[in-house]
Structures are given as C-alpha cells and as structure tokens.
Length: 525
Image 1 (cartoon, rainbow, N blue to C red):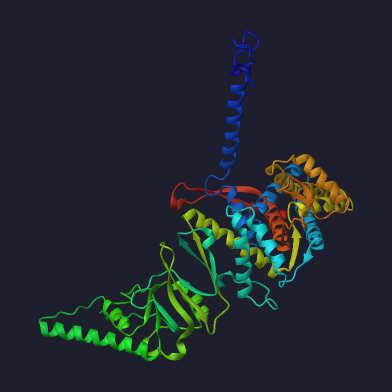
Image 2 (spheres, rainbow, N blue to C red):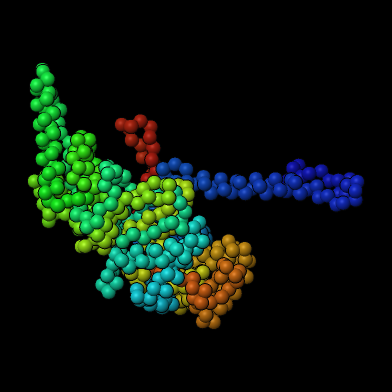
C-alpha cells in the first residue's frame, strides 16, 4: 500500500484511553479491498461492452450447450475460460497456435474415451436412476426444495411422449408448460391431455362429457366488404334486410357446426375481423356448445396432435371425421386465482402432455419453468445416450489424471500442450470446492490422489463438505452433458486460436462507421 495513502499511526501504540487495542490501518485496508473487488468486477464486465464484446462468443457457446444437452451451460463456459488461460500461457512460451490446436483436439478425443469408459449404462425402465438424474439437475436451482415433486413430474412427462423401446430423442415441444399465476409450486400438476389458459366465451356451458371437439380457422361473424368498397343503406327496409341476411348467414354456420355433432368448439384468433360475433355466441349457447376463442396460431399443431383433431379452414369441411373426441372438457377454478380449461381422456391422443406451473409471483413461476425445462433436458440426454456418469467434479478430475498419463506417452510440444489441457480441467472441482467453502488446493489434491489410485467415483460432496463416493450419494448426470461440454468448449478455444488479425474496414455509404472483422489465415486452418 502506498505510504501516502496509509492511515496515520497512533502515538500511544494503537491503544485507546480504555487500554483496548485499536488497529488504525484496518479501515484503510477494508476500503482498498472493496475498491479492488469492485474494479475486478468492472474489468470482467468491460470486455463485454459493444457488439464485438468477447462475451458474445461465450454466450453462443452456452446456447450451443443448451441446445445439445440442456444442462451444463455454466460448466462449459468455465472450462472454456480455463482452456483459454492455458492457451495464453502456452503462447507466451513460444508454442505455435497450430500445435496447441492439434494437441487440444487429441486431448479431447482421448477425453471422450475416458468419459465413456467411466460411464455406466442406464435403462429407461429404471425409474429410480432417472429420478436421481433429474433431482441432481434441480439441486442447483432456486426451487431445489421442491425437487421431490418436480423430478417425478419431469420423468413421467418424458416417458409419456416417447416409446422407450425405440426412442432416440425427445421432442420437448410435445411437453407444453402452462404458466398460471397464483397458488404455490406445490400446486404444479401434470395433465395427460390439453390445458388452455383462455376463458370460456360462453359461461352457460362449463362442462361437457363425451366431448366432440372441433378446431376452426374461419370466423363466426358477418363477412366484410373489400377494403375499397362500401355499402350505402338508404332506408330502414334495406337495413332490416341486411340484418336478416347476417342473422341467417351466422345461423347457417352454427347449424352446420351442430349438425357435425360438435359440442366443444375451439376458435383460432383472427386478425381479419372478429372471430366470434355476439349473435353467433348466442346461437352456440342455445345449442349447448362450449366455446373457447382466441386460440393462438402457434398452439394449433400441439392441440391437433393432443386431441386427434384437424384444423378446419372452411365451414364446408366441417364434418364428423374432422373432430377429435375426449371423455371430459371442463372449466376448472383455481382457488380464487383464475380458471383453466382442461380436456382429458382423449380417445386417439398423440404422445403429448401438459404441465401446469403455479407460483405466487412471476419470478417464482419463471424459475420453476426453467428448472423443469432443465430436468426434462437431462432425461432427454439419457434417451439420446443411455449412460450416466458421476457428478461432483469426478469426471473432470478423472480426465485430468488420465490425460496427464496420456501426455507422458507423447513427445515434444504435444506432450506439453496435452498436460496443460489436463491441468486446466481441474478448474471445475476447484471451483466446486471453493463455492462449497472448502480449501480448493487440499480438496483437489486429495481428489487427484484418490483418482490416481483407481477410485473413479470420488467427488466433492457439497452437502457434507468433503470427498466421498459420489455415486453412493446419488449425484449423477448424463454422459452426454459431460461429453458435450468438453467438445464444445474445446472447439470454441480452437476457433479463437485461429484468429490472428483484426482488419478495420469502413463503409463509405454509411458514414464513418468502423467494424472489426476477425481474420483467419490459411496457415492456421
């Protein structure tokens, strides 16, 4: 600390009148440590400023991991950061970027082998294992205390939309998450059928058994003239005739709906004119037809797959074979916090389910939805690649130990680069230990020692604050998550290594706008 900034020394040896010791330097030290911490945060954020900020590449990396595996988005960025740090040190030692890049590729190929060897196969019929995987994913979330409710819900949802014997992936669009404000997370439920947040258009019919459901994309309202035409009515007789024609037109539409046997009508939202007029609603009410309007265009495919119905674009096509059937369609009251329309017991259902997410405020609901999505993605990973691996930093330490052994079989600069790659992977267990309040150096050293002696499943037990067999603690994750994180992080680092120049190019027609364009030379490809 500069002498000019130091606090003045106490003349009485740091003692006050009461005789107690007072450290006069401490306030200044606290101020400086706070300033240093704030500057470190500011420096970390500074590199993300502007459209060419370096965080953009890491954000894309995180998105790629989310698309591929759905989990491990934080891990992939942390690994990429550690590998970039290793690259920086290797470059400073004068090693050519091409050698570093090729060595990293060798290391990741070997790493995938190591991960596959230490994984354990899993059967989709083993519900207990699937639950453990989903629970591990939920442990790091805000709603982790509800994992005993959300984990089984996620597993059941995936199992209902696939055929476990033949499935190689899961289309998560077949699992619709409906958010409804009010209640608590305990009120979340899995519905084997269709749930609509729209209110019923006619309150006269709120429950229909043996429902025959039609989904229409045409309007039950009087037709309009073209934009450049208008109708001039000169007397009451003409006006009366127009109203009679409108009434007859709408009554004819509603009669054709009723004739087909439809008793639940879903109406797509229209931008041309009102999808449903008051007169049409009156007729539908008289004929005891339940009506739900304002169905969104993007929900049409899911509704058709769930109910086994087909969208009807014109009244002439409204026939019985276009309708879907269900045991029950009803409006459900949610203890004072709104209503939902549930259609259950579909006779020819597609493989779809709905999850209703409840919460006391918007933040809780959003977090619960994100957590359920991550748990669903974990089960999807197990469907794609049916193998599990230990969590708690065990895979990364095992990789570090085995890649260090592998580096000793190589020669020259490659051995040096692979060793640096192995050391960089220790960032995950080190960070886990640090965030759990453990000593990262002693924890990682002990982990390394146990893995070197063949204990592949030794990992950091965050709950107990020590090292234990992580499989016995049921802390597991899909193999795909670890492989995807390793390969994507390595690919990103290799891409960054290939950028060796930045060219500034102006655009004369847009004024003095300059953009930085990364250039990759042929030498480095």
